Length: 111
Length: 114
Image 1 (cartoon, rainbow over the protein chains, first blue to last red):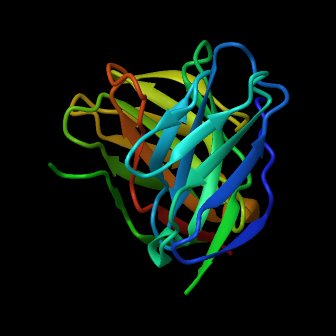
Image 2 (image 1 turned 30 degrees about the vertical axis):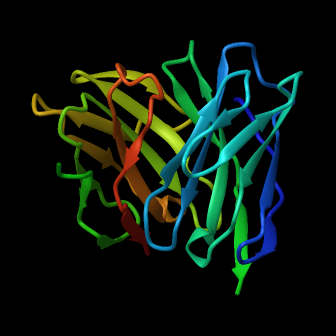
C-alpha cells in the first residue's frame, strides 16, 4: 500500500504561515498527492492536490519536491478556523484511484 | 445542492451481530467510497462502487460488503461484528469526470461494538 508519513502534531500562531510536511518515499510516478483536512465531528474536506508541479488555490499552496518523495502544505496565514487534522494522501491512478490516508497532523492554532 | 448524508449517526451493536450503514451521494456523483476510521487514526479505504459495481477494495475481510443502487446511494454491510470494528465509518462520493477526483465526505456513522 502507498504510505505517507506526517508529524503527529504542530502548533502555529494565528496569522502566521504554517508549513505541514509529508514524506512519501514509495510514491510511484502516477500517484497524485492530495491533502484533506478534518474538523472535529466532521468528515474530511478537500484542500489541494498535485502531481509534479507546485499548486496554489484559495485555501493553500502545495510544494512538491523535485523527486516527489516529499511535499509540504502551506497555509499562508493560519486562522483559528484552520485548526484541524491535516491528512496527506496518495491517490493511485492505476489502482481504481484508491486514496491512501496517512495518520495526519493535528494543527493547533494559537490566538 | 445536497451534500453527502449518512445514517444512522450513531449505532451500538453486540459482537456477532450484523449492521447496515447507509449513504446518500451528492447529486451528480456516481462513485461512492467507504472508509473505516479508528479513533486517532486516518481513514482506511474499505471499497469503492462505481455505477453499482465494486471496482476497488482495501484490506478488509469478505464480511465487509456493500451495495450501490441505481440512484447511486450505497450501503455498507458488516457481518459477524468484532470489537475491533468499532470505528467511525465514512462514505465519500465523487465524479470521476472531475479532474481533481475530489471526494465529498459525509459526517460518518459512529459504530460501537460491545
